[in-house]
Image (cartoon, rainbow, N blue to C red; front, side):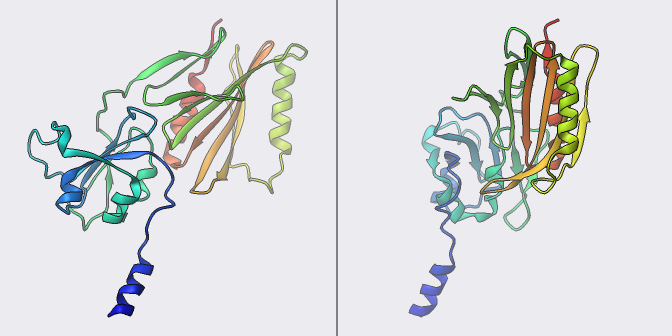
Length: 256
């Protein structure tokens, strides 16, 4: 019996190395009454330590979640030890929502769940550039001068630089040649893009990259006008989000 318990304990996953996404706001019915979660969504966190995840058993009576005493904050490892089925879902970004009818079936993504902060906004990037992006994205000014918009699973990184000595046509042709000649052994080019118009030349390519936790796709693009260009990288780990990436790039405008 002692050996059996020891072996079981060794086989249990403790989740202590789970990515530091922040705390989870969880109905106390899940922890104190040993009920499995059946509904969860991720909104904008109220502080840096808040992941934005709100997790419920779906058995909460009316008015239950309005009482702050019934919602507690836990680290992901604590909740994953109760129900490990959420492990991959917790890495999904702000704006995600999932449900299941009982604990024996798989989680299903909710596509029509409405969040208070879910609407499009226009941000001025400089005196020449602007971008349309969902308000759910957090805006971060990085130390290297790059600007990052992220929900956690979708991100756009931008950098604007001057080009005084070359025409936009020269830069455009240089980027075309770079994409054609880039080393495929590093990362295979999955697709190429050219969204140029009479005012802005836009060219880019897509590859796969990987970090410690997952594989994701990246579109590297360049938007070129006279004397200035905007470099961007659009990251997403769900192939269905390619439309988001392309539309985000196309939304970048200049003030004529």
